[in-house]
Image (cartoon, rainbow over all chains, first blue to last red; front, side):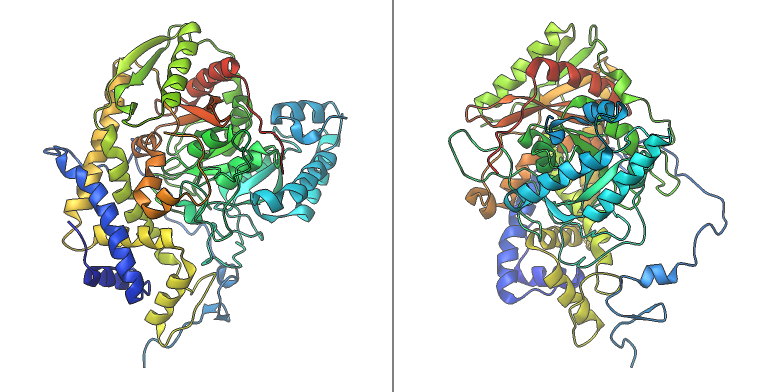
Length: 95
Length: 493
């Protein structure tokens, strides 16, 4: 499988990365080189093989259903490029 | 007085305990060495001299008070991927400009709790994506090693290139690093240092910027096997804050050194003999086999039939996870924001300017392989292949193999700006061909220097172990180290 310029632009949109026409053409070649490389996986017989979901055999740790952390709004917004009263500020989303 | 920066962690530990010098004197020696060298090597992206001196003075007070920890007064460098409270933490990326977290990663918190001193943050490939440290927003790190009679700058490997270069050039006593496909072991091999990627789950991932969560593991880069054992003991822990942190006690790795390998079975996988591999890599491998045989180990040829599929499967799984993990960098919560006419354009502009070319490539590959209609063909298939890769290892371990010996890398360090690799991303990816299988199977792997090539550049061997058998790796790597000797670059910087 390979990608064309239109697909590169669609994927860039999904990934929320602005890509110019020139960059899209360049990326098309690079992505196709990588997709060509991974193509060899189609040789592998995977009939009846379970996909890996956890690399180590472990049961997911669970914790008590209780509040153990919080009250850190100021810490959480401290690094924001734009914030006010412990809220993140973004361009208007709803008219 | 000998140069304090030439001491290993074990040596410095003993001499600090003997009150030969103070932690502050040791820290000052390192800060002076960094000042003198960093212009040439670019290993540190931020130094924290005031904090280092404060931590060293506090360490001296603790020692005077009789409460010295196991790393008391040892100055360390920290890969920029680890969150360090109030200190530059940018993962080598422009998109995290100015980020100073309000929290400390579990691994670094463990080190400071044991008395270690932080010298600063170490350069790395952006978001740990790279094998040469050239994708860093802060520019490439220069390998302290040069080919004999040459003044050409070489890469230190990556992504933990700053960690490896700083350790090799004695700009820290040891360093933290991370390894998703070889990012500890490949730079260790390129710089004549020792690097271990422990079993997945051994070190907490809490507070480490995530690249590919099912593959990422922290580990140390150190000057010798003993120092790596000392550091890992402190870095590893059971952590409530990471659900994949394993619930088992951390052994005393240093105690494993000096043990015999008599009666151990070392597997030699046929599939790691690659077409076009330089003769000196094969020679080095045979030398390693001979050393372990001489030490009483039984050598057994083995087969890991799915080896060649590990790298292509990795280049589906890792970008897929990265595309999801890196979605958080959107110009809202931290770091860079580039304005746009609406929020979607702000996201797109921020990520276009904030991410470098390699990160964009991988995020886009990941987005593509996870997108509707391609998920089964790429991602699901890669995860099934991953099961087969892990099964290969389980089969040989079940047959009585205790550890596996392979080359660490297919070559020695290459030049900065290598044209072949710049032209074809897949060429760069091949650097990790011997290391990436270990991440895919979640196993521990250690790279240990084993010799120099004909140009005088270091080459490493890799040992792969069973899950949570890091002690076996330290013991066996120590045997190789004793036979090979240690390798220190000639100072030109």
